[in-house]
Image (tube, rainbow, N blue to C red):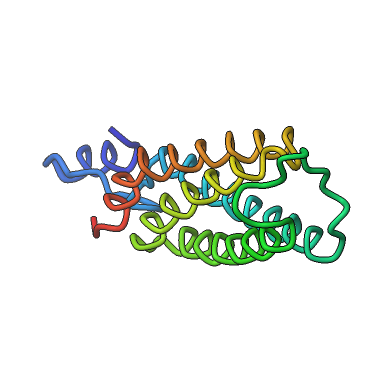
Length: 156
């Protein structure tokens, strides 16, 4: 019992309920991983956009195997990475706002990004593997901790 409630009981003789002070509603601790996922997603989008711009401005930067890249050349993959990067940054902003559509689109876009990086693996293997790992981390954060975000949006 707080000092205020104890003082109230002693003066009036009746037991009073403690008065809540400060924040009446506590946020879930699990929202942290969701926001970390959003931040990692924002960075992934920026990195993808940079990767796409590099492929567009300098075709010789990425060294491909004699078989080349799957389906398209480096310039086409540059456009693909740039478009995916811009979309991922936009969806990451939606995640910070708390939109449910952003979590759904984030899972889809990170899956598409992981597949695009898998195809781009022969051009830049270490970077592609790292980006795929971060895509999986973001997908995990958005799927596992999405329910906590919905619960924290409800009024107390």
